[in-house]
Image 1 (cartoon, helix red, strand yellow):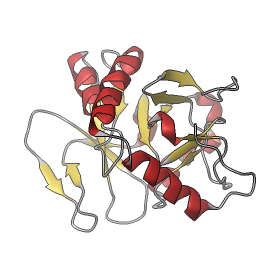
Image 2 (cartoon, one colour; image 1 turned 120 degrees about the vertical axis):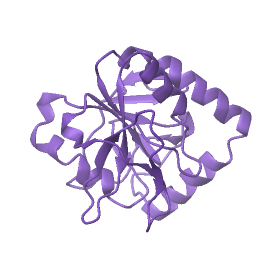
Image 3 (tube, one colour; image 1 turned 180 degrees about the vertical axis):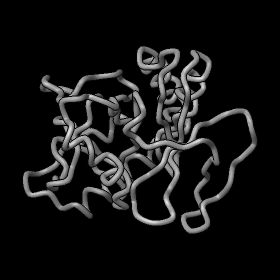
Image 4 (tube, rainbow, N blue to C red; image 1 turned 60 degrees about the vertical axis):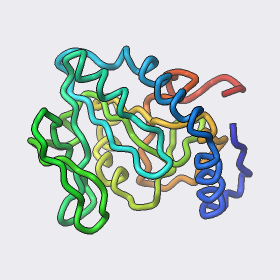
Length: 203
């Protein structure tokens, strides 16, 4: 587990976490991807709407989790950046070849039937860092903050289930928090699927 000081330097922490994630060898990354697919199986139920993501850069690859979800009869949805604002849509993945590159961000997206995060049952959330209380640090774009803002108003509903996806090295003691931050419900790493907040003294 990576440690942070009480006086958190956000840019320095971002650099530290990116370096730690990028330093993982390919064999470790592949093993972690297989492990999280096993750990996530309890969340992948027939008929459920599951929000996934396509890994960018050194993010943990979620492809095996999404394949397992499809095999179990769940519907898989991928994030789509809107033309205006930062509230993501989620588009349903099917057998058709409707992939395209976002014109501005040059990331791969899918042109399927779309809905908002509120209508999903589970959302696997990418992140750069996450702390023991379940607060995440993203890449700084604010897309997931805007997309999940409704959970601040309806925290007790527990829907959708928010599952942070990370390597163990991305777990820190604390991340900087803002008033608009939404706490994750579960953390999925190569070590397992754990409910947040984490109570034990060790990761």
